[in-house]
Image 1: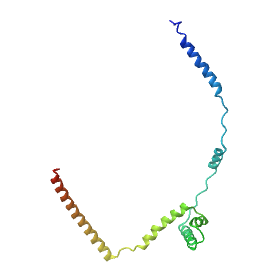
Image 2: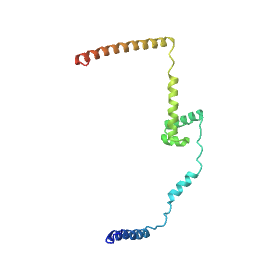
Image 3: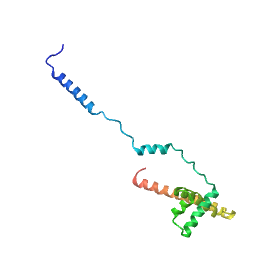
Image 4: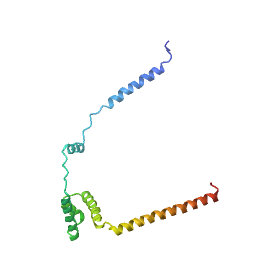
Amino acid sequence: MADENNTGSIAAAVAPDADVKASAAKKKRSPRRRKAAAESGRAVSEAPAAKPRRYSEQERNEKLKLIETQVAEGKGTLRNAIKSAGISEQTYYQWKRTVKPVEHRAEKPLPAGEELADLVRLEEENQRLRKLLVEKLREENAELRKRLGLD
């Protein structure tokens, strides 16, 4: 049955409800306004992106030569020359990196018949010397294991 003497817990339970109602009335706020930066950021993202320009190899080489001549003649800095060519610095360095290896490959002549034979002999000698080194290292390793008593 109900305990009539236990009225303290009921009073404690009633008091928090009153606090909750009072605090709920205080927390009512109007919604926040959106910031102007957020609205402008969305407007930029909704605009269609410009289609990237593709340059042919000839156009790339012409622009690279133009930039190099401007810098060599002292007409301005590298950055200014790149901007005047109408490309970004990143694009310039990517193009320059792709052009360099091709130039280096063209400078190295392929080995002729005798040079190729010399190269083959050197590779065979290299393999023979490696085998000798492996045998010597194995012998030393076995000797050290024997001295340390690891076998």
